[in-house]
Image 1 (cartoon, helix red, strand yellow):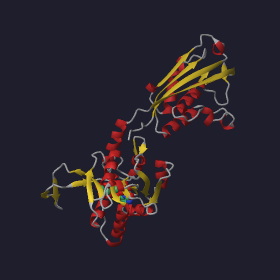
Image 2 (image 1 turned 135 degrees about the horizontal axis):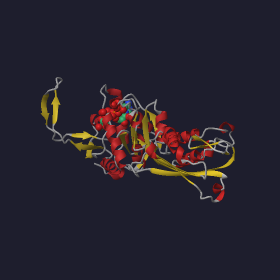
Image 3 (image 1 turned 180 degrees about the vertical axis):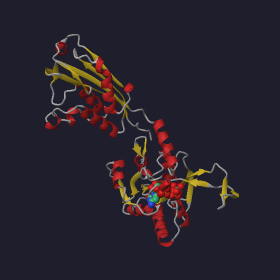
Image 4 (image 1 turned 180 degrees about the horizontal axis):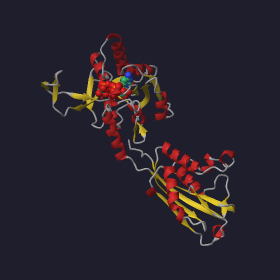
Length: 401
Ligand SMILES: Nc1ccn([C@@H]2O[C@H](COP(=O)(O)OP(=O)(O)OP(=O)(O)O)[C@@H](O)[C@H]2O)c(=O)n1
Ligand SMILES: C[C@](O)(CO)[C@H](O)COP(=O)(O)O
């Protein structure tokens, strides 16, 4: 058997055109479901992109999934291409093999998109198992007693498990040999092959067994995905972010101020383009800061007449929707109003209630405090009111590989 050193140029195929019927379709095809803030297919692709031996990658995707794919992967690196997959896994593999024909690599690894937990050592083992005249298959030993059952649900026999294995992917083959075998199987067989080593076997191409990886499970059922998501959440790096905001508005003659969404009778009013609610403006900036989404002026330019006299809960609700769209959960907010008058204490409960509604969080996650400026400076001279705000938001953590 010839040695691996002759396998110089290795490509990979990731098949991702399945519909995931067994996992349930309510949340879309399973390869696009999220694990620890990253789509399953993106995790799988990353493993191949990071492996130094892989030159080129072809991904077979379903014709209806272009938007899902673009959202999951973003811009494609130059060595990655997609093809539209077929009705069966076998057909998707063949279409991807054909797409590699021009670059004609020495060897190709064929992998299920829904096995995101493979690692670099497994890829290396599979490549090392390929020779110019044989393929390489990662397998796991069977660790439970195997029974053959009858149609009536009774035991027919206990199957001798000596020599039995379960087959994983990536499965590796000399490129020309597996392409020819797939083409022949496509032309001449009615039978559907469930993996590529079965096609190699049918075509008489020897396949070497190499050690699989226990973690490299295929996410087949809804329960598999739930368990993978729990595992990802458990191992995720905590991603708790804090943002702060500051705002100040001067007084002018008037009869009320609006602070943290509550109208308070007062001998003056705050001057501003909107309702000049300093507390809510500082909070808007604090929320936007937790995801680098600019500041209040980015989203609501003071030059825009539509915000004239606007109620500032609009700004806070918009910032909170941006946070939520990025997967963030607001852990707590803390606002300090710096003002000689009016007194805030009597209105604190109403402000807390207003913020609870705006943000969709409970009262104990909201803190509203007030302090005077000890008669110092412009606040001390009652020329205006300032506010500072802090927001803490928990974003979906990045799960290590
Ligand atoms: N026509 C198909 C069918 C399957 N696959 C891919 O082959 C792998 C095999 O995993 P499997 O669990 O069989 O996926 P599905 O076919 O999507 O699942 P189901 O049979 O439950 O519909 C998956 O990455 C799947 O996207 C494919 O590329 N083209
Ligand atoms: C290719 C495969 O992952 C090898 O174990 C498997 O056969 C594909 O899944 P399916 O359930 O047979 O479609």
